[in-house]
Image 1 (cartoon, rainbow, N blue to C red):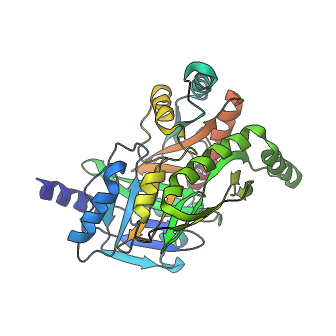
Image 2: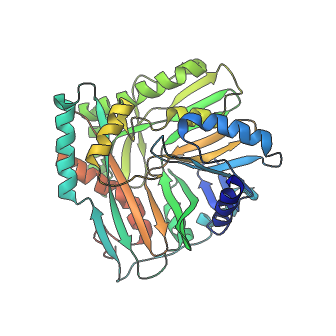
Image 3: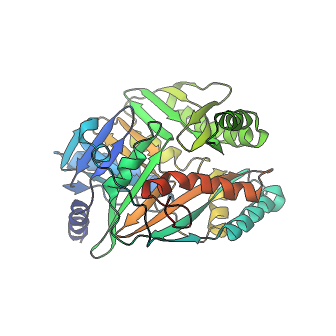
Length: 389
C-alpha cells in the first residue's frame, strides 16, 4: 500500500510548479520528484530522513516544507532535476501584472473578529493561562481571480525585494486535478547549517514601512525603542538559544537586536551563530527541533499552540512552517514560511500573523497583519479588498 500511495503523490508533485528557493545567498530550482520522504511529523522527521538516505541511493538532495502543526506530516521529496544560480530561477524570468477588475477578497476572519481574538488572547496572557507569555495569532484573506494565477509571475514580483528569500513549494493536490503551490517571500532564516557551522536569524517585533523618508526613519527608531516589541523579540531569542544550546559547543548572539528591513516592513532581528558539537547533526533535525519558534507560535510552545487552536478559526497548513532543502551530508537551509499564500487555480489564500504579549493593542495588531499582507497583495496587483492597486 505504501508503494501505491507514494507513487500517486510523486506523480502529483511532478505535475506542479517547480520548487524554488531564491535569495541573495543562493538560488535553487528543482523540477519533478523521483521519490519522497514518507510523510512524517516533526518529532520523528530526523529519523525518517536518515532512513530515506540509506534507501534512496540515487538521491542527493531533498526539498519541501514543514507544516505549522508539529503533529502533521512534512512534505519532503527528492527532485529529479536540481539547478542553482539566479539565471535558472523562474522568479527572475517572468514578470506579470494582475491589476484589473473581477477579483474578490474575503477576510477569514474579519478584522473585527480578529481584534476580538487578540483581546481574548490578552485575557489569557493576563492570568487566564498561567504560563502563557506570548501567542501569535494569524488571519487570512481568500482571494479569487478572474483567471488562473500565474505562480511564476507572482514570484517575479516578490523577487524585486532583495531583502527576502522567495519560494515556491509544490504541494500534494487537495483534490484530483487541483494543484497547489505555497508561494512566499520570507525575510526570516530558521536555520542554515554547513559542516559544523549553524546560523539563525529570527525576527520578532515589526512596524510598517512609510513612503515618507522621515516618517519611515521614525517608525524604525520607534520600533527599536518599543518595550512591547523588545520583550516579544527577547522571548524568541531565548527559546532559540535554549533549543540550540544542547547541539552546540559554541553559541553567540548580540545583546540587542538590529533593524532588518524589507520593502514593506521593519523588523527586529538577531543573528545567532554557533558551532555544532557533532557536524553530522542534520539541518532537518535542527529545523524540526526549532520549529515552530515563538516568532510564529508563542511561548511556551505547547500552551501557545493550544491557545491558537482555541482562538483561530482556520487550519494554517504550511503557513508559519518552514521551507527549505537538505543534502545527504546533512547541510541545508530552512526559511520560516511567512509572507505567503497557497495558490490553487484562480484562488490564493494569504496569511499574516502578529505576536501578542501583554501591552498589545487589538487595533494595532489588525494594522500589523494588514501591513504583512502587502507583499503578496502587491505581487497579485490588488489591495486588501480585491480592488486593483
